[in-house]
Image 1 (cartoon, helix red, strand yellow):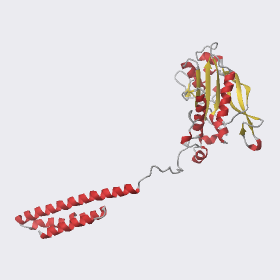
Image 2 (cartoon, helix red, strand yellow; image 1 turned 180 degrees about the horizontal axis):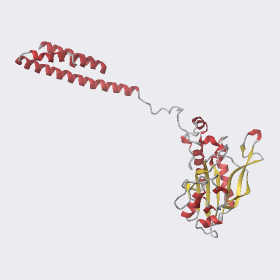
Image 3 (tube, helix red, strand yellow; image 1 turned 135 degrees about the vertical axis):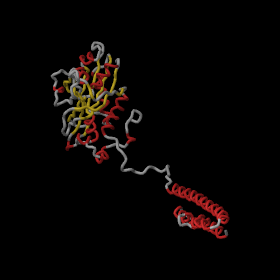
Image 4 (tube, one colour; image 1 turned 60 degrees about the vertical axis):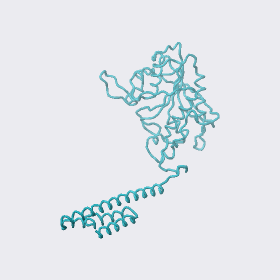
Length: 356
């Protein structure tokens, strides 16, 4: 019995001295493992007479339970201590400023430019409007006064989808003008919308891509005239290019859906191979515009004798290239992270109608 008591005291002392979980595991194995000291005594019980085995076995089981309990208690204490040490070592001071992160994302120039345009026209009272990328013939062509023989309907210009059961074919919209048609069909004037979105045409070179972005504006009421259109666009180019004044001119043009129609040019300089907007004696085309054609109004269920208005449209990539000095349209879609890091914008720089 004295040997068992001495063994108990010895093992409990070793348990208390264990400084980490690895040392504690060694104590457990040396005492309770297959070849442990207490396990070895348990194996000797079979050699004793019944009375001695009963008394010795009860004492040995009690010692075994005490040692196992002491090991569990010590293990819990060591695990808690290890967790506290880890928490103390990995503590983060949340009051510190953030570290520069080379992997931080960037806002794509297209997204940035769309936000700028929406913010500028939003301050003029324009509402944002959207429509589907896949359109039918009526909304993409017919309602816009584009005749059946118009070149825009030809296969080399338009992406047509397979024929439907009735023989008609849907198209990937060639402009965002169908959004104007859907708006005029669903809303009663006065209407004032801005409609950015993806458009698709079968063309690809340094200045064209099969998928690109356009933004169009539409105003319909009873008194809007060409002077309102010119004032609206002048305010836009001054705000967008961040200039106090920008020379502008309007050249007569033709669009099936507007009459009269015009191309808007802005003053610029190309001296030394460098383009500067707002100065010089040269001109740069930036967008098309005009008064909504009476046939378009009639196709949308509006009386041309009662309502009139103006519309305009521009390529988002084009004006982004002009403002941010991007030389090749195709790089917008190359998914080059180095390009995006150079031309992109940090997320908190997104424009809005509050900050501008």
